[in-house]
Image 1: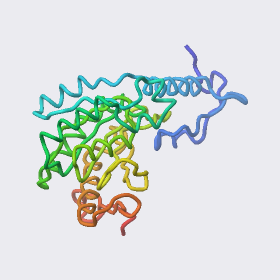
Image 2 (image 1 turned 180 degrees about the horizontal axis):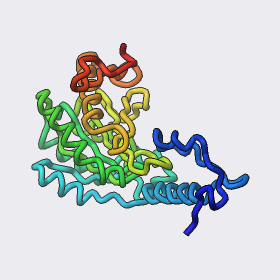
Image 3 (image 1 turned 90 degrees about the vertical axis):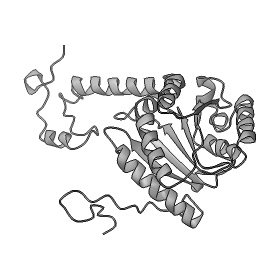
Image 4 (image 1 turned 180 degrees about the vertical axis):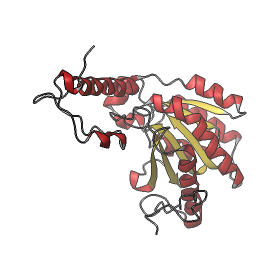
Length: 270
């Protein structure tokens, strides 16, 4: 057991109080000319958590069971990347469905020719851990608000080895006018479980990121489910009104007024 307190040789850090304000690796102190043992071990542990999050298998069965308990239908799909190694080395294959999944969506569309207002997709991305921890409560928020708007919802597409752009193919094959994908973001050294939401209006295969809007860092220690769904609903409403998404659609959603303040807490909007 290592002790990097000042008595053990580590210099006292006058900026230590800043550590209470951020999870970033600042004010780590020093022991002589080196990093204290505790800070070094914390870094190695965070790095191991990030690697584990990238390689953790996507438990889509558990997610499908959770959706079924809420009377929600799901479709189990797979990208063209057949395994994790291929997925990490060939990003392009993660952006398209394999032939079996494409056929499943073709059959579903034949039975539902009218299409949907909103397609919802969940993919493991670079952190299945983020999906396991955050997808179900986030989905519930999104669906509650979408149904309140009167929008029709597709079954939830659960995609293994998927990247963001695969949602465009899913939505195009289902005949959806909008799509949102919940996907595990690239793990950071303080956030191995960060969920990203990517929204596209009029999705189709071949669109670039310029046509998408992103809401990032959705997790318990980051952006709350309530705030993420509030911002997403704003984007979807504006997209329907203006018939576009991406760089030409800015997130100008006002932060809900805090109880007792009587004022808008989004200082960026004035």
